[in-house]
Length: 238
Image (cartoon, rainbow, N blue to C red; front, side, top):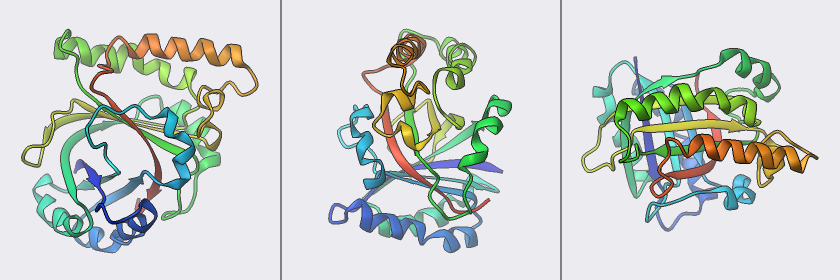
C-alpha cells in the first residue's frame, strides 16, 4: 500500500460550504477506484475562528486536502479524474506516514472518536514543510523527527499526530515539499492559544509552552516558506 496526499484548490465561484459536500460526496467513487483510509480536510466556516493561527507564504494557499491509501500510486489517474471537475488546481505527493508516540495518542484520542463520515471534533492543522537551505537533508530529518517530535504531545493539546515524509511529487510542476504534518487539535484550540497549548486558564503556562514550541520548530522549519493551514477533517473510510 502507498499513501498519497493531494493538495486541493476549490473553484473560484464556489464557497467552502458549497465545495465541501462535493468532496465528501466522492467517497463511493474513490473507494471504487481503490482508495482506502480516505480523509478529506477543508478550510471552512467551522475553523474560521482559527484564521489568525494560520501561517501562509504561498501566493494562493490550499483550500483543502485529500489523504488516501492505494495499492499503488500508479492508480492516481483514476483519482485525478474524479477530482479534476471539482477543483481549480490539485497537486499530488507520495508520502511515508508515521504516527509516533501511540501511547500518548491513544490516551487522548478516545473522547474525540466519531462514526465514519462525521466531522472529527476540533481542527486538523496541516503544515507543508520545506527543508531550510542551511541544513543537509539528514540534519533536517533528524531534527524534525527525533529532536522536535517528542515535544509534540507534551507542549500541545493534540490528540492525533501524523508525520508524512514526502517521497516525491506525482503531478507535473508541483512545488517541492519535504514533509506534510497533520495534527488534530480539540475544539478549545480553535482561535484560543491557551486551548492550543493545553493551558486553559493558565496564561503563564501557555506563554512558556508557546516559546518552547517556537524554539523547537525554529531549528528545522523555514518560516519564510511554510504554509500552516487549519482545516475541518472528515474520515470517510477506514
